[in-house]
Length: 192
Image (cartoon, rainbow, N blue to C red; front, side):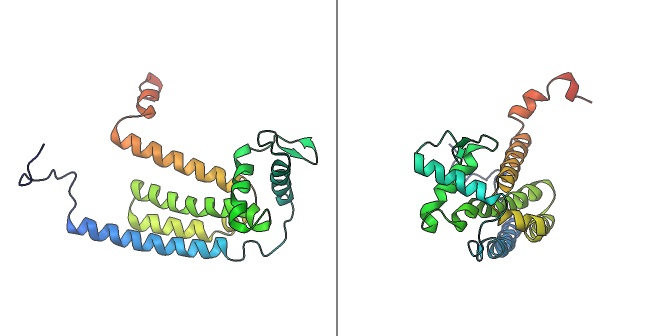
């Protein structure tokens, strides 16, 4: 155990400039996330369900009615075209919206969209720099299609968020020098 008077390892200690840069990044990222929350959550349940959103709400409604959460049906017919987790997220959001309604069907995608913006900023900061990370977060959060799908009941944004989380974990473990990337790339096909 190191004594209290022993110098700290330079790799674990941060300079005041690093602390200031971290606090600036956190403040700017927080502002981007506030903008994202306004875009994704404002009047989320104001308009009626349309197009494929009916399917998400109906499958979740039938799961709640039958208490069968592993056998998705739509109008009594088995429907395994989408992952079960996306329907479960709709069901989990019902207590927060007062029941299964338009907002409950869309809330998981709005939360996933906000998480995707946050994960993208963290990943880009690790790969590039803080300025590029903030810019990438603003671009993603204000892209028309991304805003549309983050306010639309589907599994697309949830899938993207999962992929960004996997990339961030992969990058983090790659920098530490361990994990599956070392085992996979130890084969001759990964060497140059």
